[in-house]
Image (cartoon, rainbow over all chains, first blue to last red; front, side):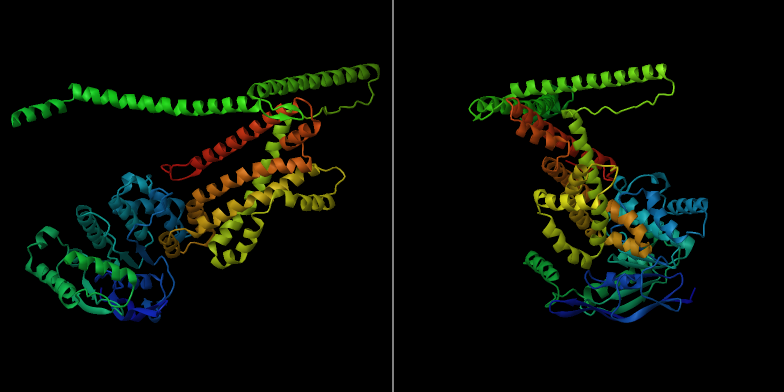
Length: 283
Length: 339
């Protein structure tokens, strides 16, 4: 369990803008063991997703790098499967075909046709989606789409599962449901997971470690919190657990006390306007 | 007072109440009214048009007599059908004569050499429609075969798009009438054959149609391909899809709506260009029909040209609808409104 698996070392990224380069991330160091569930939490715009995209290989780090099993990664690949926030299913394919696209690509020549079919169904069973196998994404609900997104990622047999705010766009009940499903699957498969979230409860409930990020620009890892709650975890039992609430408070304190979102002075225009808008509301 | 109001509301919410019945009748009557209007208004529009045509045509005097109204045009339409029937009879008679001649010759001398000739009557209005349709479809098909692959390639690469775009923009507005002399000369010198499979006029019209009609498909395909959602591209990158699979599985389905917008524009242009090309290239289609009638200058000519104009319009409309039907069949997004 404690074997070093994924290492993010001294990662920083700069984006070119009209006013010169903008440093989004700086000096991010993180070591993740096999089978560990790590959450990245921070205020919106702090660069959580950028970290994930660098690990996925979708962005290239300006400084530093990511090592998986002792080898540097700098291009995207199925061993680091991504569950996207907005599911990103191909709307013209059925649920089954969406999962099949990846399976065919990865297991070409390694599995027979029937083995592939069984593997696809197996993964859809894991997320309880076999009943809607032949429906198109626009015919199923948001929560179901996200389940399929998870099945698609799991079917790639990834070494690391990267989840970019997977439940961010869902309503609270559906989200709780999917979190329980994810815990079950994690319990069965023991995947290494990096999940981006801005939901404190979600982070504490699901993670072995919570990585809290400071605000940008030049965001970096602020604190790391080990969650030593025993598994399997039950949200109802934990709700009154003092240890659970202690972790919760620690994260909240970091987010709203130490890293209180201050109005950015220079940086992106979009952020400025949202900050202005919130000021008006307060006034 | 408040008790009375409650009573009133409960009563009016009861499904059997007169209030509901009135609402229902009102709903169904609006539905019927919508239906009537959607059938009635187009007919009304056509009637008004015919009226204006009838009245207006009486005031237009030409060297070939008064401009034909709807009635005269209808007469010419009947004439053209009659001509077709005559031609059919003549063809049948020709083959009967040939068969008779041959059997007689064989009877007299079993070793006699028999000649089976094909009937070559002069092309009628309807055979000209057929020629025009064949030419435009071949030209459009060739244009599509060029435009879609090129569109995909330049849509995928921003630099290639920038490099090719000026050429597209310069050739796009060129009139078919400007292309035609060039194409005619090239075809005349390049397409030389003892027994040509296609007539030169067909090749010239086809190439003109292709050259003029491929641009909208090319540009729209490129724009559609370039607009593929970043998320889907990321999915493709994570899966490490090969170039070909990426195009087939992600790029093509995504760009189908844009592609069809282009195809419909292209087909419209192709049909318009064809008539002009046929006039000058003397391809025996509708364009030549109009030209011949113009040169002929009989008192019927204007009416016959009007028949051709209406036919051209109807066929253009039908072609567009056909493409629309194909689009709604192919398109994955069945909820999309295509019009």
